[in-house]
Length: 183
Image 1 (tube, helix red, strand yellow):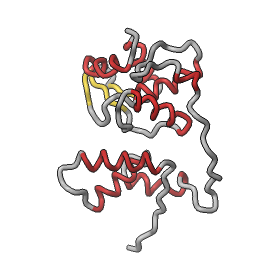
Image 2: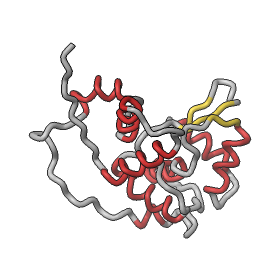
Image 3: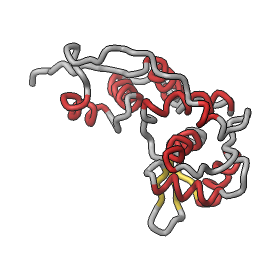
Image 4: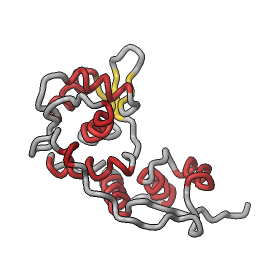
């Protein structure tokens, strides 16, 4: 069987490095070849290396199609005003276009790859908020596909995915304020 080359592309090398450090730190022994390939794929937003390899032709730009690098605008102050200095969400915005970016910032504060009960997920959401309506936030996280739950609502888990590029700076700033590493 011939081996085909699969190009690797990462939008943010810093986020890639943080993800790899975290994933390798969770391993008991040094990673093998396949474990390292899977860690690279997960850091790029794929489930594993096999799904990365299957989708690379559709999703990874080639050198000829790479967009020109342009500096991203700074995080909008209109979104940062919803958070205090500790990274806690102060209030739920009335403007619908502000809600999803704020949910990404709360999502980043939830534990990765952990299956928890409703009570436990509430205990993870509450410190990320400076107001009491954690049920609203939990429901919105589920509605937007950032949090998965069983049909009976007993088991919750964070859906692992990379935040959209447009939200990455906000998420990084809120994690910095909350003194969390981005996962």
